[in-house]
Image (cartoon, rainbow, N blue to C red; front, side, top):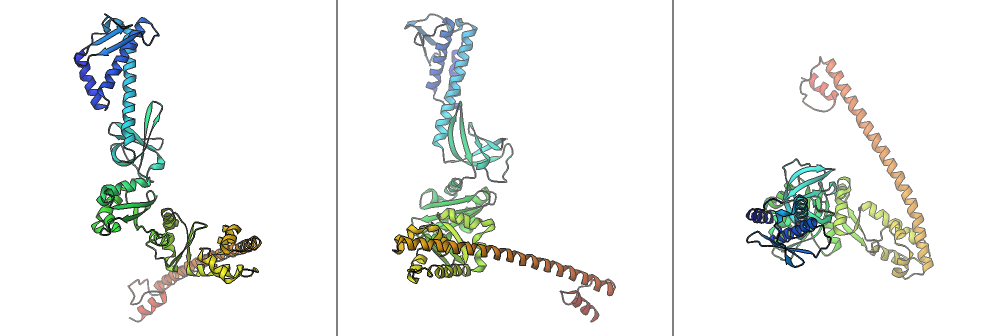
Amino acid sequence: MSQINTQEMIRLLDSISRERNVDRSVLVRDLELAMVSAARKYFNTLDTEEFSCTLDTMTGKFELTRHGEPLDMPPQAFGRIAAQTFKQVMIQKFRDDERNSIFEEFSKRMGEVVTGTAQRYEGGSLVVLIDRAEGFMPRSEQIPGEQFTAGDRVRCLILDVREAGSQVKIVLSRGHPDFIKKLFEVEVPEVAERVIEVKAIAREAGYRTKLAVVSIDSKVDAVGACVGVRGSRIKNIVDELNGEKIDIVRWNESSQILISNALKPAEVAEVSLCFELGRATVVVREDQLSLAIGKRGQNVRLAARLTGWDVDILTQEEFTKGMETMYATIQTIPGITEQHADKLAAMGMVSVFDIEEVGADVLVSELTIDEATATTVVETCSTKAKEVSEQQAKDKIEKERKAREEADRVAATGEALSAGDAAADAILGGSSAAPASDGTAEDRAKDILGQ
């Protein structure tokens, strides 16, 4: 070893301790162990107890002992091979300490929203520098369509921290529902102070999120506080998410009211709950059907996740037809009366499909009928359900056929009108002056001739 600059070594220890957030005493212990390793290498011994070392942090001098006796030999006398051993052990120990420090620090920060700097993409995962550590955001935790370049600011959630061999893996997320919750805690003081509680979140990252909130203070409007004056609070969150839609839903302990709220902006006429199937049948007006279902079924899908119910959307006509079919089907069975059908309807079973799915055991206990009758009811409803399914499939095909014919008719009519316009222009000398009336070529011709 070359001559050790003790004061420089102490300064380096202090610097490493600050930069890597490692306790100084741990680094001192690492140096002592490295010196012991160097001595064992020099003397070619396997006895781990033969040498011990103490570093005086004031003077920077090593005190090395062998079998408890002071070893009157300066470190630089150990030679090149022992020096290399000292260096390797010291570097490895420092790395282990830094890894342990990072793991301990970020484990405490799980669930926290942090701001980092985008570094690069590796196999679809985004690598982000957070403070002194690198985290990675898997493709599954990214917002679809979102792309970052090196140096971009990235706001994200620390989702998980785990040890992977010699590394610490910090998993980040912008697509997790909890990211939305944490953003609301940042933007809405009432949420951070727990005056407003976020009861449930359903999210399809990059597209739409539904958030159910409730206020524990009757003077505070949960929805209004989350939206902010003229939407100021929610706008900041939407901007952070690049325009992702956020629906604030008022929480209610009544599942029926909560489901109605969750399906907004659609207006709900009726909600029927079947606890046996965990299904909610929601009745809406014809003009509200597409709004309740949402684009590609997104609105009803998110409402189902938010409320924990399997939500089925029907128009009043579909609901009534299903009920009538169920009543007519089961009342053909001896021993089953209209009162039995009423009870099934009250339990949320509103079609032959529901009775087929719920099974005979429930009918025996709820309707107080014998097992044979209950089995007959289920089998009869199952047969009817197949007939209804076949008819619905035929109706769908017929509806699609008529829609195609209507589209073809409209297209043909448009072509004919265009041809008529061209003919009128040719007869009238190519005039295309604005007519007094709009519409067909015939109207245009009459207008021009009447001038």
